Length: 612
Image (cartoon, rainbow, N blue to C red; front, top):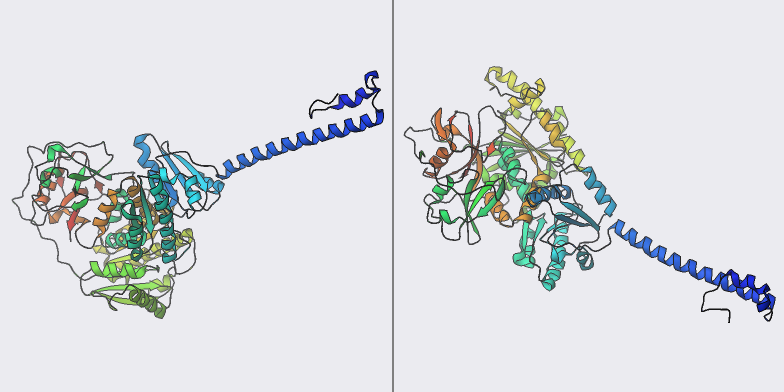
């Protein structure tokens, strides 16, 4: 009668001495009371332990990123690679105009490790929040955890630890999981898939349907390196065009331009540089002269932001033709190109170069691999690609040597080359930092050898080139040497860029960064993928840096709009995107004050969109 439910305390045991409890056996009462009290204490401690463990596990799950993501309309990044941080940076830049956004990363890496790498990466988030989760992108349960169906866009990064075919097969399975999950939820966002091999692209497109956009990383880098190596300064133009830090691609329709020609549209934007027309989903860059802008057409431009430009009226004093003749461009001549290093997709790059150069050109391959191994690898790759056994325009010369050995590099006829490309050598298992260090050492050695040979050949023939006052004198000689031979270096780590800049060298391709920029741009606007694919196609128009003397008479007093109109009136029309003034190191794309007159020097360079 003294027990109430299961609650009992020590008062029961102490009360056993009281008269009211004398009827009970004193010893038995004490034993029952003590046992009951200990049992109650045990049960209470057990409950507290269970609750404590549950709370601890919940907090631990939160810390390890095992909780569900509730956001919608976010950008989802699946996988972790050398491009992840660059993608985060560019998406954050893109979200700046909206006051920020949300990026969710799902990777097979601990959440704390992901967050630590992001914290170490110096970038401006512009109000964008990054949420990290640990999980396997192949599993639908993990995709649900990051609300893949509610994402505005999904980026699937390739696994760089695998071969190209294995990485693409993994990406294909991720796409399959996403397609099934998205179809059930009625998702509207698109997917951007990084591919390693262009031959695997059709399969991913077939599985993903209209919701998928593919970016073939090696194909993009190969084309960029070939184009930039053949045109000094073009690498800097592409660095400015790709990403969200400068001008970006935008497409918008304008009622005021309907019925007018594209030639008139070119000189109607003070804050943008038109490139072409987006018509019924198809991209038409550098349209034919007199092309009419139709209802529903969108004008493709390069601009700082989507709300930073408006269509106006062409200048009243526009100059559209020149009375004075100018020199025609030189005919295409055979080239001598040097490749230093080795890549697993080298055969694709060689084939691209063969498509660009004139017949009779030479390609010298310099690598640490034995000559027989080099030939066997290229031949095997050509057979796998079902290509002809021989190139149509190029003669390939193989040389073995150490890329960091001056003695081996001096055996090369460097004074005979028109351009040289230093590849991020993957013939051996090295980190990105080690490969960049090797590329930087090779770059400086090549420049120094060139400088010495050019001085010996004809010191007076070197063309002076101004350099920043902070640049060391030895670096000034290196800059001068590039006027005789373009040396382009592939860089993997963006931090290496600062070292190259200190050396006064501006011709480099940040391969991982450029691919990341392209992926981020396509994630924000899938039409950008059509534009980039059109620019990288063998046929059609491409971006060039060409001397103004091929278009204008010396010291012509013309505005940017005037020159743009003159280029559109050529027999083979071109589109003017920017220019590089004589003596300057960087070209300006989409320059301000397009209507103001300026004096165009003979050695000014024009950034144009034209057919070769």
